[in-house]
Structures are given as structure tokens and as C-alpha cells.
Image (cartoon, rainbow, N blue to C red; front, side, top):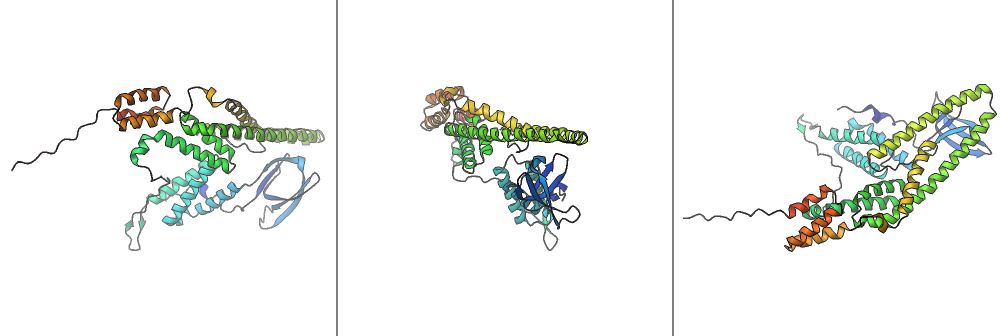
Length: 376
């Protein structure tokens, strides 16, 4: 079995460690801030030659170009990747548990920077599950296929097909509210963006005011983040004015390179979000380009959602009652009324993929051939 090299990259990383980059290019990895004293920060970092030995250093706060902080999500990610390093030794149960951990992580943090790497891991786990194991006697034993969907078993297959439009809208609404309760506002807005494809649902009407509130919250948060970055830039410029010409040139080159890197990160985040059709992403705290872009989106959306839902056109929420009426008419045999309701549903803009079961319900049903009696 081929195991991707990228799965071993995080095995030796500490549980929690920050990275701090200075404007002169110096980088402290796997470090932590011990304390602050005036304009100075005291750092603890591993010795480059002997990582088990810890060193301390003092740096000026205004010399910090970038501070990448570890988050609970980073800890979860590293925990998964440590397990992944043992992919070749995993039992079927280990693979199932690890795959579920990956799926849960991606549901909770869909915009995580290493999401693509986790999707690669999930594929590797599924591939590993398809390879038959050998019994002690040397015979091939079929492994249990890994599934990654927690499918509800309560509704009948018929109801699932009939009310697929509302079921999907409700799924997105529930995911949005779960993220909201956990204060994962970006992820909540990602779900709302997908829910906007279901404007005819009752779920969209319920989500609309909450999305407006979340957009304003993110706008406020990212305005503060942008203002803090502007302040840092101004302080950095003042410090550069005090440098010698040689150091100024060195710092300017490094800053130009760093800004290009920031723009690349911002573009990648935006492109990844667009691929997933939700546009929203969390801008790194030290990235002005990404912060400005995210703030612009929050401003635009909060302004749009400030309008009452009744003024947004095409009667939001009207499809849910129409779908219910349609199936009641079908079940009662009132096909004439059902045809009229279907026209209203089409006019209201239901996506074609969800219209098929409704159209099929109006087709003439094939008669079941009567059983013939055998003559003696």
C-alpha cells in the first residue's frame, strides 16, 4: 500500500507551539511567549541543534512581522496526523476511527488551511480498507468497507425523495446553527451561503436574520483586525526610519517578499472558498490582503441582509408549503390540482434536480398485469 509522504510531516511537532517572524527575516518556530515587559517580549524556543534544550531571547514587539498562533484546531489536526503516520500498521477499527475523526474535523473546520491534506488522508484510509487482509493461514479476508456518512434511518425512502429539497435545506440550516452555537461564525456563514440556493425553503427564512447578525459580527471583528494591522504598519515604518540605510534596504526587501507571500495566501484562500461555493474564509490575523478581502465581503453581505426578507424578491419560503400541498393532492388523487401546484413550484424557481420526483408523480402509472389462472 502506498502511503503519502505528507502524512508523516507532523509526527514530531509539539502539541502547542507558535511561530514568530521578525522584520529582519529571523524566525522562531515552536516557541512560546513567557511574558511581556514594556515593549519587549521574552520568548522560549528550542535550540536549533538540540531541540530538547530550551533557549530564551528578548525581542522588541514592533520588530514582530508575523505571529502565527496555535489553535485548538491545530492541536486536533496534529493529533490526527500522528495517527496517520501509523497508517500501514492500522487495524480496520483504527482506520474506521481515524477516518471518522477526519470527517468530523472537516465538518467542524471546512476552511482549515490543511483541509486538502486531510482529504488526501481520508482517501488513503478508504484505499487501505479496500485491500483484503490476510488471515493467519495466508488466505485473503475481505475487510469491511469504510463509510463516511451518518445517514438518518428514520424517514422512509419515499419521503426522502418527495421532500429532498426541504431535507437538504434543513440539513444546511442545522449545520449553520450548530456552528453559530459554537461561535464558528465563518463556518456558519459558509453554510448560509449554500442555503441561499434554497431560498424557497422555510429553513432559509429562519436563517436569514441570524445570517445578518453574523455578517455584522464578522464585519466588526475584521474591521478591528484591519485597524490593528494598519497601526502595526505605521509603527514598523517609524522603526525603519530609524534604521541605517543598509538595514533599511534589507528590511524593505524582506517586507516586499513577505507582502507577496501574503497576497498569495489571500488568493489561495479566496480561490479555495470559491471552489466550494461559499466564498467565506478566516483571514490570518497578520494578513492585510486577506483581511481586507474578507472585510469587503462581510460589509457587502451585511448591507444586503439588512433589508427585510420580504424585499428580497420572489417570495422567500414559498416552496415549502407548495411542496406539501402538491404531495397531498397526489395522495388524494387530485391530479388536476397537482398540475397547477407544480406550475407554481416551477415558477418559484425550484432547481431542476429536485423537480424530477414531482414530474414523475404526474406520469401515468403502469398497470400491474392481472394474474392469470391456469386452466385444469
